[in-house]
Structures are given as C-alpha cells and as structure tokens.
Image (cartoon, chains in turn orange, red):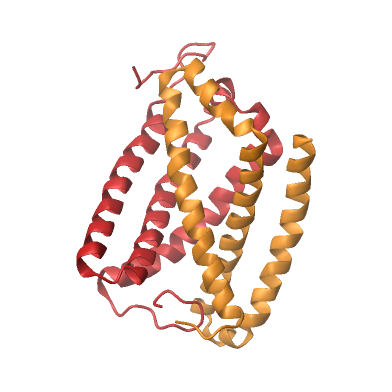
Length: 115
Length: 137
C-alpha cells in the first residue's frame, strides 16, 4: 500500500484515529439517548463519564480528534492546491506541532481537574 | 489506497466521487462543530458539571440544538462512510464485504434515529423549564 515515510504514518494515524472516534460516537449516541428516560437514569449513566478512566479516555479522544482534524485540513489543502504536494511532509510536521501546542494545555487543564 | 493524501486522483464519478466531496465538505464543517463542542463540554464546563439540568439549561438556546443536530448528522455520515472505506479496503471476500457494509448500514440507521431523536424531542416545558417530553418508558 505504502512504502513508508511521513505520508504513510499520516494516512495510518488518520485511519486509526477516525475508526476510534467513530466507535466512540456510537457509544455516545447511546448515553445521550438515555436523556429521554428522565433525570435519574440520565444522571446515573452520565456520571460514569466522571470516572478517572473515562476522563483519561476523553483526553486520548481529544488527541485523536485534533490529529484527525489537522490532518484532514492538510488533505484538503493538497486536494485544492496540488502543488502543495511538494511540501506535504513539512505540513505533516507542522501539523504535529500544532496538535501538540493545542493538546498539551488542554490535557493539563483536564488532568488538573482529575487530581 | 483510494483516499490518500498526496495527489491521489479523486474518483472519476458516481457515488465514490460524491463520497470524496462529502468527506471533505463535512470534514471541514465538523472541525468547527466538533472542536467547539469539545471546548464547551470539556474545557469551559468540564464533565464533572454535565448532568440533566446542564442539558436543560444549554437547550434553552436553540443555537445549541441546531449545532448538535448538524454536528451529529454530519459526524454519523462522515464516520460511517469512513468505516465503509476501511471495510472495503480490508475485507477481501465479496460476500463478507457486502455483509459488513450491510451491517454497517443497519447500525447507521439505528444510531441516526437514536441520536437525532433526543435532539429533536428534548423540550423544556414551562417557565421552570425543568421537565421534558420523554421518549423513553
């Protein structure tokens, strides 16, 4: 499929992150649906998300969403402006830097609430 | 590998071309909708504050309902179509590929109804706004 390099990793991470986000979305549909069962049922179920393991999962999910979003922008840029293909590797590294710059403070805020 | 990043020719036509455009347009919209959703729920509010009454308060503003509807509708189609592409890349057998894609279609049918129903039917009633029309037992 791919011979390695930045493009392969971008493609692979995009795919893994996308599948993970989609599977979480299906779970999320079920917990939100339970709001129709009334206050008690919904509050009991939604309280599960406050468990530290779920909070860590949320932090991982945010990392996946950020990467998938930024890499999606890179794909759209290359599609709209094909000459950008020549700098797609640079864009991949720029993307990783932006993801890290946004993710680290977000993870810090969420972890500090957890502790 | 049909949905690559670097100058992979886009599909010539038909459903796959529609899918190609849909993934990029919905993806662009979802960046705003999903990152906004995550910022509000996980940074501004925080999961420890989210409960039934939080949703009642939030849905007093019709913009959030519209936001959630657009976000969920696009996300389910974008996510399911992405899973379809993954299935068609990895499931070699025609029979199993058809079975997997059909099962995925059934899942999409269920989650689109289950997901959009609360967004459409959650209606705070009266001045207190603390009761809702329930669609559950």
